[in-house]
Length: 234
Picture 1 (tube, helix red, strand yellow):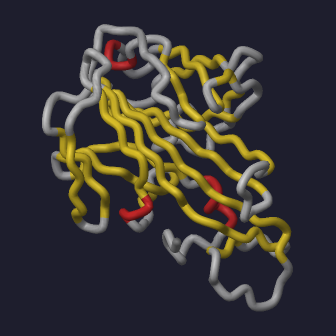
Picture 2 (picture 1 turned 180 degrees about the vertical axis):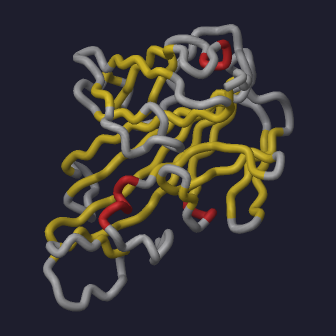
């Protein structure tokens, strides 16, 4: 699966998936920081949506301007989706090449599978946030929609449902993705200060050796939590 053959620099492994509004619709956005990248909408997988009561909610999808769009058919409070960014080769000269792309001169350092996940809080539910079942997931421990820019949001990071310690977490992935990352503690906990009026995207990553049904040596997981808070005057 080719996601975007232009992504040949070493930053490809830092790209993430998140949910944001585009032209009044919820869209799956792929990229890094403020930079959106082209992707194959067919790479979006296993979309799930829930209403305020935590029950499955109806939805449909559309493709517009090359982006996958989420169209709810009833009120939706939480959304989760996955994107398979495909197989990549990390070269000894620093290049990252998509599977099937000619390498030319150079040796392969290691092979990777890039998997991207996104969860979004679209509406307040009045219930404690529950894990949505993503392989790598950021779970808010307070209602993020009740907060404002500059306030603190406690989080727990889960890998396959278990707390993940000492993992990298970026508190403002859209506007300050180059900031020094936070680290989760032994219980998978971290506290993020909200950096943005409006859309906030928090990102975490984890790399591990592939241990089952492997076609690559390592798997790089990236996950985001996105939500929009009311704007506070600057």
